[in-house]
Amino acid sequence: MADYLVDVFPQLREIKDARLREGVENCWREAVRRGGWQLDDLEKVPFTLTFKECEISLAAHTRAVTDCCLAIGRVLDAAYRSFYRIDFDVLTAGALLHDVGKLLEYKRDGDRYVVSATGRILRHPISGCALAAEAGLPESVQHIIAVHSHEGDKGHRTPEAYIIHHSDFVNFHPLADR
Image 1: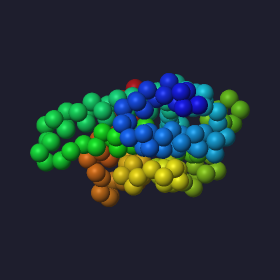
Image 2: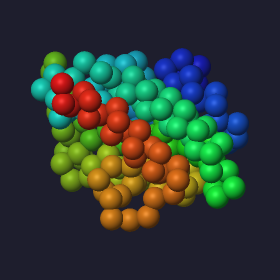
Image 3: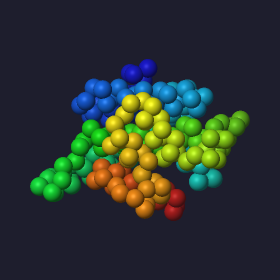
């Protein structure tokens, strides 16, 4: 199963801390299990229900956001290293998990994907943060998941959380506006 997750999310290889990498994998496994999905559903579940028909999977969106985060992180780390350091393990883990809660927020209804009972009361940043906490992931990663969307707009964001927040919306808005 770990090999399958690395095939879906090759960016897992970027996480140097083996415990953190394992925690990210365990978080995805638990979200799949608890949401009633199979691992291969990651390439089928849409990344958003906002569009009438979304052809972009949760896995594809997650890979794109993670790649954007890593590129931005490298630029900012080089430019501003004397002011702050980017923790690339935390950045990668947070990017890979930013939407993990969508596996609890969504469900399949025949051939359609709809908001689940859990999703009606807990949006994915909250359920994803809870999954990360249960997986024993550090607060720095939990923070990123919790504040990556509008839920975090009135609070503090770490540099890694800002990168993920903006990378997520850079990936979303051009698709929403087409």
